[in-house]
Amino acid sequence: MKLWKKSFSIDNKIEHFTVGNDREIDIYIAKYDIIASMAHAKMLHKISILSTEELQQLLEGLNELLIEVNSGTFKIEASFEDVHSKIEYELTKKYGDVGKKIHTARSRNDQVLVALQLYYKNELSEIHHLTNILFDTLLHLAEKHKEQLLPGYTHLQVAMPSSFGLWFSAYAETLIDDLILIEASQKIVDQNPLGSAAGYGSSFPIDREFTTKELGFRNLKYNVVAAQMARGKNERIIASVLGNLANTLSKFSMDVCLYMSQNFSFITFPDKLTTGSSIMPHKKNPDVFELIRGKCNKIQALQTEMLLLANNLPSGYHRDYQLLKENSIKAIESIKEVLEIFNYSIQQIIVKDIDINDAKYKYLFTVDNINSLVTEGMPFREAYVKISSEVENGTYVPDTSKKHSHVGSIHNLCLEDIKKKMNQL
Image (cartoon, rainbow, N blue to C red; front, top):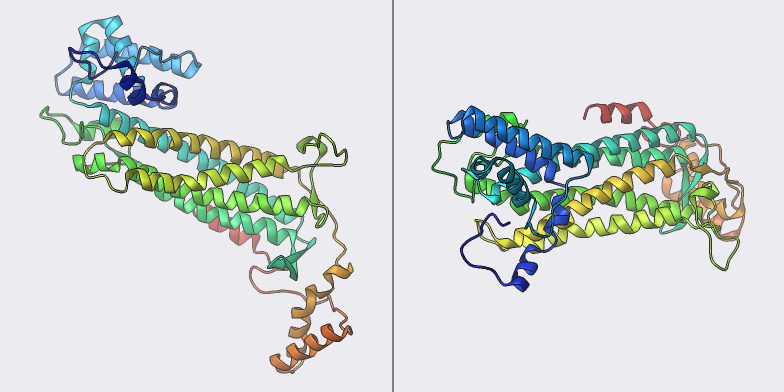
């Protein structure tokens, strides 16, 4: 069944190409298309397009389909073009002409839009929640390991003293920035496009304020052309937001892989969280974090794809938009999986005691030692030259007693302040 079916048949090869894999992808938005159809049916009843009996029949049929979706038994067979045609077919099969009335005053364009925006709203909330959980885990780890020193690096060269508390809380606070962007994207998709039809509204006296309230949207996308132009723009914004979060997780994963290597050996994980080699019996590979890194890099690439797909399209609907849906949904599902497995794995991290007196860390404290001389009255440039000369002639002896007291430093992590910043969200 096709919503646009006419008196002629379409070439099978063309049909296969234009439908693509919509049936598989539409399973993710089936729930939201049904919910939107319920609201639409109630609105049609309100403006006297549907009788009370017809409304009750449609709501009954839609609720039965929603139960199927929630139980995992809902299927979109190959005879259907997409979820929209499947739902309308089932309603028509059960209620005859009443089922055919569900499409009154709407287009598949605004059906897809509203279902996607409801899906985006829900999934962005879930991503927000999972990110919050990871934030709590990292702040807990920062508190637990705040006294354990960690060499800091610039250019991958030993630089200055750091700590595991500083490392964990750095990524925790960075997640706050990612959450701010997630919340901004939530506000953008939280606008009801239903009623824009094919992008130019309808001559029916539809009540768009009613469906906005019924669907729980915070606002209405008033201009019907603007509502349709949100297709593509929503996906670009979400791709950018997910890319920022993915960048944080990818960078963190790279740190984990680096710090697990024998050359660093700062951390490890229980054997059950690592994999071995087919020929090297000593290997404990960080495959989980390597895959997180790879998956997150794929997500970061999504924004470029969204830009290229929609950047030169004029206003109005274009079939190119169909291609936005698949990878947007896959990226959302992927980032949720990554957040869950990252949190599960990082909770089991084993932080090692690092011997700061090891010769390779000898120069970690040169800056601190320069600062000590400055505190005693020596000009900074002279202090720098003095310590530099000691390093060059091999007479440098590190003094590791200096404390960093300023806000956000090793010995003043401000974990409670970071938590308060998160709570403000």
